[in-house]
Structure formats: structure tokens, C-alpha cells
Image (cartoon, rainbow, N blue to C red):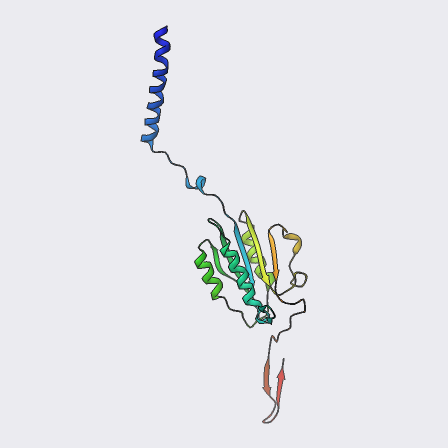
Length: 193
């Protein structure tokens, strides 16, 4: 009986070492989906309409908006990602969800304002359609429009994940959206604005 009690710890140690050896030879691994931590998904809508070219005391509205987006990019940490949507008379994805800060900076720096009006609602709707399929996402809108004037259904937006950043004074935006000149006769012309 005494011999059995002394041999028991040795036998348990041998079993443990044998199991450790079997585990080592099996070469187990963790699935990468277990190891990946989920970052933040930042969806940015930037107004690229003609009114964003307005020069204010603080600078050009569009340049201020780009600086705001660049600050967001600089604040990203791996594995955060960002998508950028340009909103003008129509909306388009400038860059899909991307984590590479250099690619994102290039996309922002390549943006130019257009000579059209703004369909901010379309750009936000596009971003929201992505948000609905992503976890841990935030929406950032950079514009010179006022929230109450841009046609957004604010009720469906979560205030914790929705950031509306405006540039410029509270005055209404006015822009020439169409201009036409036609000749009536050899001397007279009509101008339409």
C-alpha cells in the first residue's frame, strides 16, 4: 500500500508528460477568428457639393471637412476600418472599408468639390445600408447643411453612433444650379439662371 502511494504521483506525472507530448505532436492552433479583436467601423459621408467651396473666416468649408476626416483617420487603431462616401448630386463610395491609413489619406486628399447640388440624404442612406450589416460602427457626416434642413430621418439614427459635423454659418446655402444663354436674334440674348 505504501509503495502504491509513492508510485501514484510518479504515474500521474508520466501521464501528464505523455499528454503534453501528444498535444505537442498534434500541433493544435487557434482559429484566426478567435484571435481577431473587432475594431471600430467608421463610415464617413463628406459633402462634396458646390456650396462646400464657400470661403469662411476659418477657411474653405471643404478643406475644413477634409481636415476633420483626416483627424479621424489619424485616430484609428488596428483593426479599425473606415469607408468614405462622397455626397453631391448623387452619392458614391470613394473607398470601401479599409484599415490602411495611407490609402484612406490618399482617398481624402484626392477628393474635390463638385459644381452640383447635394444629395446628402442619399449618401447617408448608402452609409446606413453598410452600418446595418456591421458591428461596432459609427457614422460621421461632414457638411455645410443643417441637420434639420437636409432631409435625414433622424429618428432612425442612434445618437451614440451618429455624428453630424457642420461647417459655415447658419445662413442658407445659395448656389447657381443652372445657367443658360440663348440668342433671340443677332443682337439680343436671353440669360436663364
